[in-house]
Image (cartoon, rainbow, N blue to C red; front, side, top):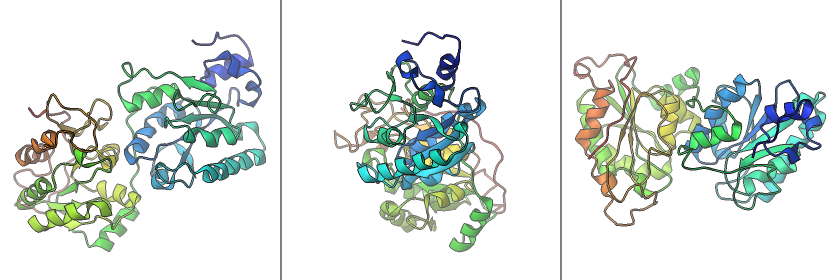
Length: 395
């Protein structure tokens, strides 16, 4: 239930900091920056895709006048540095799935010491938005003494959070809607910045040709094989794209080396798997004419860069984590068994992805402008400036 708005500092604190329980206001209003901007710490997710989608709340917070900081593990912290509107990125040195008790205490101590050194109250954090639903993710803002700590109910977080929200999954089907509800803002399409100078260096380092349309293939999905279009399909698609006059790049981590080998056996593609950092991939993807991706972190990176993309959905659903871009085509099958959200196919057939054909994906790539009929005859063709929005369902 929402707190009653009353005149004075407490009401101002409630409006600016989003506190719903009047009991939280006691003793906290003196630490809120008042009518000036609120310094907000966003405790960010560890998954790449979720991290990208966390940027959906930054424009709304910035428009409200808040100063936005991110707290993230090393695996995703670099992405926050590429997000427009993020003032500073703080790192908590934990690995995915790790409790990291000491690391979280060190991060809290660093944040608290910086707050104590701040000469003005508005330089101290007034609010933390804890986006992950785990208990451990809420510890650092608690130990740092941030007065308002907002998050959804879960994992016995009463006490570590003091602005606890109830998640209504029906009313908020998308992850970005849930993040935005915690921040009390409307969700925006996430955006990432590419570094043009760094991109030129990557072209030189990897000997990448210029002047031809580029199809970036991203065959990985860390979640599991039920999200991965078969590698032999990526290989056949690469051969079609090269025949049509495009350059093909394969992007991913060391985990995608085997899939990349299958692709290179079928077409003269450029294998960049395991040879790039996450920010390198951001810069390289920004140069792609079209990206073909599974439902993965790189799907959200491509969408945040406004790169036209073809997204292939298997066990998961675009209802929860769609690519937030008008330049996306989503291919998925309508089956009774999906979405199951399993890491591996429970039925053993993977029909959700095996039923998406190379012809369908190739047609979507062509529709997005990467493989216009004259590209094969004019290797120097420039990257198209626009693509038609929409989604395609596969029966």
